[in-house]
Length: 64
Length: 541
Image 1: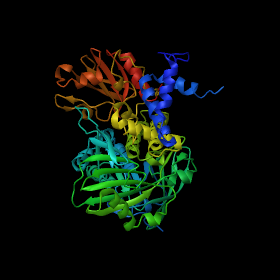
Image 2 (image 1 turned 180 degrees about the vertical axis):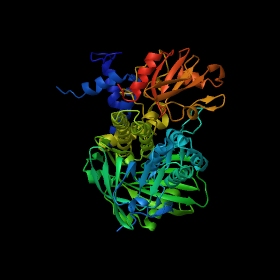
Image 3 (image 1 turned 135 degrees about the vertical axis):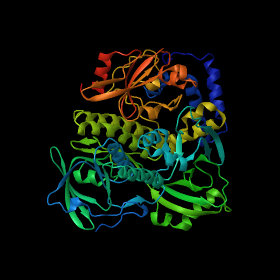
Image 4 (image 1 turned 120 degrees about the vertical axis):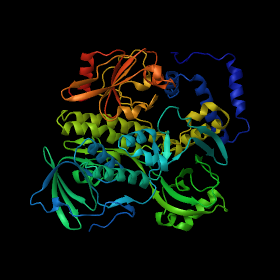
């Protein structure tokens, strides 16, 4: 079973971040929210591992 | 003062004065069942087939109007078959396998239940509840004619209950006035609003969902709808927040509209208003007549304990779920299946009273599973927050294009039999590499044999099922006998028996309970171990 990766793991992080922001260009708030929800589900399915998903759900809750 | 609370579909057991009413002092019975609905009648069939005298008290004189529960699962049919009532159900019922899911304007995807081959009964049939009930009542009359000790007393309303240490005193109202009766055991099968539960002051706690549903049963004059289950999320025709269309026998269709919480029931129930919703949904040119309609709200609730000394609760009286998943009547039938043989053995002096505590623990486990599934379906169908709604719609949108999202669509997880994992009646699984689905606690899946199917051969007593290995003809411990059913996979043409009961193992011996759940299994017979397993399965350990 894999652990949740919480160290840098995306090559060219700046490119990724830009692509993510651009995906929202021209979308209304409502469409943007819906897009985020779909993206989240696509990514979650790719990860698949239930324990990793649970770890991610709780890791993202932490704000400080 | 004994007015009907609802209209009858069929009057089957009109009030008749009974000798008990003329007796100078209260007559004592072994078992009284409160409630003549499907769960009460099934309980009576189970006990009567064991030769245990049973009296059913119903404040009405037959079967109530309205389709109500319409979806009966394979396990329910297998149980009804043990009671000798399944054949007319299957003959009358509608078998369906295809389901379609719609969101707003369009179809999102369809699915096929793809029922597994090699079972005597289909995965589901749709059948109006009055048929389901009356087939069982007719079976009760048939047993009665054969001399089975089964009585159904119409217009006998229980007005007062006093629970003593070892019996219960009932004060009963009839059209001829009151009489008093005693019973060693009392079964409360008197429905979701159980008067018995109320009289005894037991809590019924859980979640109430703030939504109303309008059921309209319609008879199509021009029938263009196929035998499928259609579920709409947020239909753009605006006839409800969700809509379910499902076929029943007699060319009747169930249409179920989710219409919200703040509604004027009287207004919504007017035929013209129901027709307006139906026309928006079916199109203006649809020609139909209305058969029955009703507005319901629902709750996911259960009693903390289903046993209180000599009083036992079953069906909706013990637990209530949302209708999504058809887990109401189907789980009630599993209650009866579980309770019948245990109560029979306790009454016959073959098992200690504590065996009945396992009815409570096993069926509370079942109720929890049903409440969990039904709550999840409800949360998907009726999202409780803006974000929950957003995620729900994201699942629906994705599932139109991507297969991965389809299993997340939840318009009801259809009832499957509960596995009693961790039950005190189970012996540890000792069949290395045996199939998971037949582990101790599971209900036995059917399988085709050289001459018929497996489940009828298991019947309603303890069985030693031996596959590819020798066992004695029977095993008797303290008066309880497990009879042997010896099979060989040489005769297993379809391979289903090996797949469902052997897995990777070369041979297997199963100890199977009267409700056809697995109590123990191992590769070879061992008398001491199976003696211990039989004792354990009857609450003697």
